[in-house]
Image 1: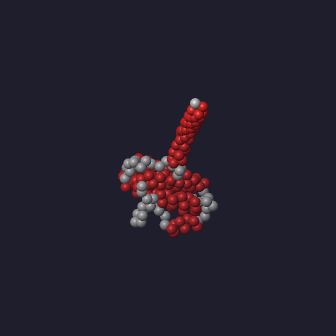
Image 2 (image 1 turned 90 degrees about the vertical axis):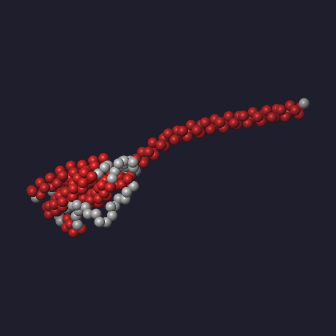
Image 3 (image 1 turned 90 degrees about the horizontal axis):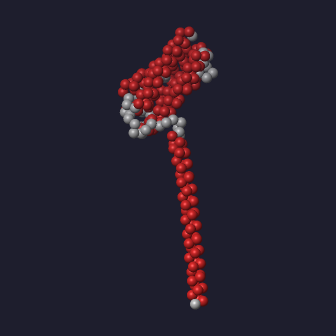
Length: 213
């Protein structure tokens, strides 16, 4: 009887310890689950925000409507804008006229973000940034044009910049008008409309500047 009682007491003690351990593990499991839920709730918005702002612009939906005209517009307008920015950089230390300097600032503020936007579109569409060889872009300056512009100073620079930027803007307007006519992407057509509006206005200003220089 004593042996049975000792064994029974020992068995009940072990059972009680096992039950306590199980309850403790269950409680820890609930704490871990709740903790995981908290982390999951905060991680998702952070990831989504980072993805949406990685390149500083909103990428288009890959399922959005677009066609070859949209792709060509972006592929050709990117280097066109890049050259305009190169021309604008040459104004630093060379331009003299206040209105020329103001237009230089407007070109930089408008066209750099537009380049980022078009690169995002091409990435979203799964298309390369370059259109390849054999595509001519209206209004592009030659290498000699850029060298001559860089060699000018003061009023001579102002006149050369105005003349070259008028031709450059006219080429961009032509390309944008083609996109408005043939494109399918609402975003690309909207940008084309803005290019026509802004650069046509700058062409008018540049012609007025030339008249008084």
